[in-house]
Image (cartoon, rainbow over all chains, first blue to last red; front, side, top):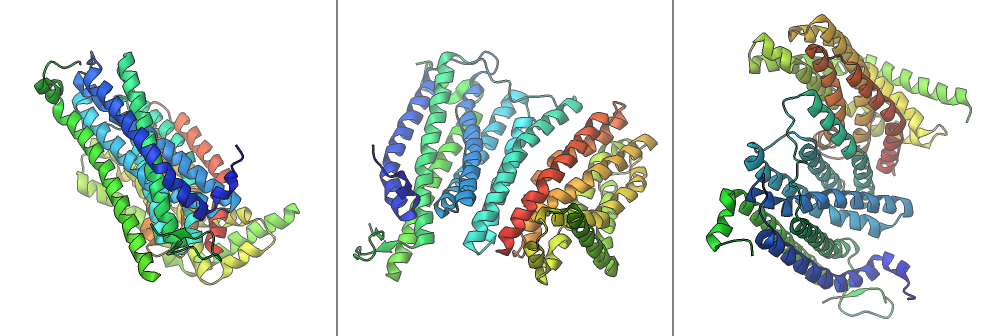
Length: 250
Length: 52
Length: 227
């Protein structure tokens, strides 16, 4: 197609591209979530074991998957930034963190909402929920590290290093908490006992996950535009010939 | 349609509190995130316009 | 790189840090005092019933050791950072991870070894039997170096940052969780009569992994902090 993708690695070129993409991702997200909600809440049958409370999975599972997926993507962008010395990569990592943290919080909250009717307790120390909790702390660490360091370059790299260390930590935590649960026989409730999925349930869950994913892309692109404006200060009333790359005020 | 009536739908087999809290909080968080971004953008643009 | 050169550099770093710590012995003794105080707080808060203390003992003692290590992390790099010695270390020809290992080892000797040595006494305070006390000391012997290695990454990331004391806790505590689980688990297994070998092996694995990866991550963090 002859598009020079490399030119979009410059913040001032990426900014208008992101602006054009946001509406598309937003529409797809809205449609997918609407379809997912319709099927999940209105069409799918009840679950034999858990009753209607199982319907929480249509938000819990997508939120949990997005929280982990976004963390890995954030760490990857940070790695690209350090490897290629590209500040746009760091800006993407910066833009991802708040959305990832939000999904982690939602995964924990909806997990508690699901756990109370199902297992009788607001919180259980199973491997998945505990890993989500630690993930939330790691998101907080990445964001706090960034805001605490004044020098932008150092802030980018330090939060990047921590994000990468955290990627290694989460699987280790998951394994160690599973291990810990087998030692302490009493606490063997498991949130992995998902209901046997009827086809409609699975469809709804996949639609919601896809919708959350599209929503994340749209929101992260919008935030990255804010980050670019804050860091690069590109606005100008008109584009002087000497600055063909400046962004026009809209 | 799985439900017999709107009342059944809202009650969610007795689990209405848990199910609806989950969905409503999720929706609120997403709306809040979008609004916060909208405000952030407006603030940055306003600040940089004043510097031009 | 000649092997003797690296070894000499390592020994030099360790010797220097130990010497500096000896000159400020009260500073160096803080982790130990903290450990004793925290370990004494829990029975006061929970009640003296022996069965309860024996149940919470492994966890409480491990958490106290972990917090003591956390509080002492400031001493690994801060002093050298403030007087410019750290910049010199980054610039010299020796590989930075080697120097990091030296500094962390010295930190462990000062902050970790006293914890290991004191732990039997504290274990007895919580009513742990002989075998459990031995497992406690062994688990801390394997675990405290790991805690120092992992903690050094956090210490390097927050060098010179305001509010770094709390920030380093937020960064490092999620990374400490596996070591805590295996360490306290070892003692709990011993108390339950199940045998602590599995947990102790896992602790050993954590130690080896941290020895391989943590110095490298710490060196990267130091370079970032000093650019």
